[in-house]
Image (cartoon, rainbow, N blue to C red; front, side, top):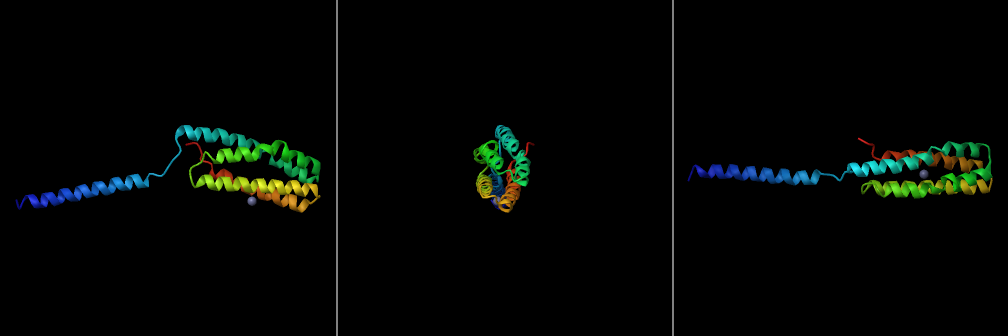
Length: 148
Ligand code: ZN
């Protein structure tokens, strides 16, 4: 009987270590993207980048104070950008998703301000919001997971 006791306590230590490490394992397991999801996100991101790649064209139009074409460009080629960005944002993990949606909204606000500035010949407001939109795009792209 006296030999048994220490054995049982060792066994109990083993069991508690096992329980603790199992518990830790499930807690530490952060949500991740599946391979399928990742591929889908990459594909959708290409559609967003296809539009953001055209932003320098908008800068040229602003520089030339070509206000009619600034407006056409925002409503035409860039018209889809908000929808594409929020669609992509919704594919992201909780936490990242909210950040991405907020940045998408901000970019929309900047584009609207450029649109307004175009209506009132306000070069300063237009170019400043253009710069802001570019910065926001860079932050947005940092939230997109890269293919492994
Ligand atoms: Zn901004």
